[in-house]
Length: 195
Image 1: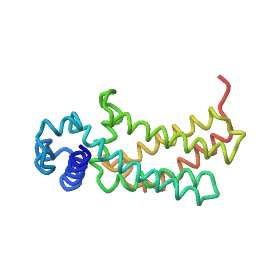
Image 2: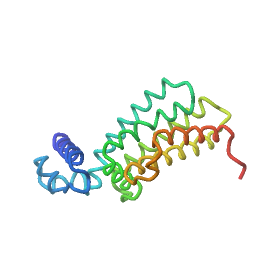
Image 3: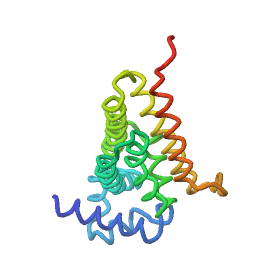
Image 4: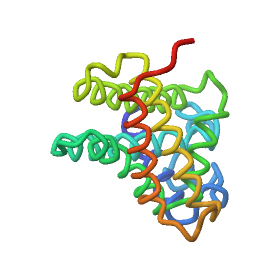
């Protein structure tokens, strides 16, 4: 069972990298993996779920790289930027696939297991950001840290989308992201207004 999953994963990863998500069919993935189409669908019900399966692992690697880099940063905003910059950099290598991955995470069927795993990775990123904000500035408060972390991921999501849309082409995406994160961190330190 594990060998088949690994072959399917490898075939999907290779084909998505070679030709992009839109140009690949599930039939091509099953042929390259040397499994029947029915077998393929036992591991992932849709092509979108195959993409989630592959890109969750890429996201996980980016998150780990970001965590290691953040641990070496003393400044809070620099540390938070270090957490998410690898995600944007890695997404820029295959913008079409990254955009399709984001779409599947945001709008895919809620019951898909790989979507749930991807959303948990996002929640993990946000928890790490909030924890760093609170560790560096305890007066921030848990709610402000949580909201700032969600906002950081939101601007990260938009930075990834910029790679495929061409929006703000005359600005450097990573420089803009660094500045936005510095603004969010500064805002979080002031707390949230009473409701």
